[in-house]
Image 1 (cartoon, chains in turn orange, red):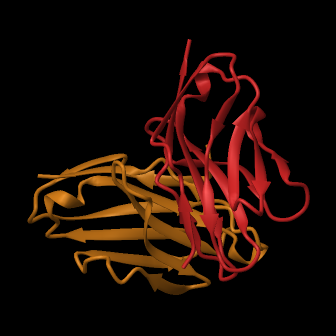
Image 2 (cartoon, rainbow over the protein chains, first blue to last red):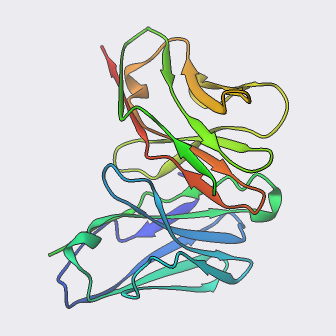
Length: 114
Length: 112
């Protein structure tokens, strides 16, 4: 495996629910990322935590809220989602100061919003 | 702003034949280029990278990629395709500020 673990693997939620996605990395990396993967669209970078600073994509709706309590854990809190938010959500980590910034991905959470 | 283009949504190739998956890029400064592969129900997996040096880069599973600065391309190649190579392939470029941009992906189908 890649050293990046995401839970749950599958999630079905209603539009009024609140849920959280979890990501954990065991690679000693100092940057973590949330991506959204939808069919036939580029991989969309949602949030980056790098050296404990958050960098976000300003187009991400506020119904998505990230949390990074330490360099090994990353959460994505979800509330009042829309059906178009259904997608595969991927977490990744990297060692940003290594120069190459090769990212290691988890297997993803397949989210369905009803 | 940097960008990556993968012009083919899908590439079909017969098993045993050579394969090419195309990628062109646009970035300021020297490019850092990557290929990733995604198997069904999995995250992306790093295949190979170009930073500097030889224009032909070798990676995992027998894949290689050719960097062409004048054509701003970084095509992925393999001399002999396997059915197990069937997957989604992503090209990516990194700029001087560590930002990585991925392409839309190309589905490779290797036909037995």
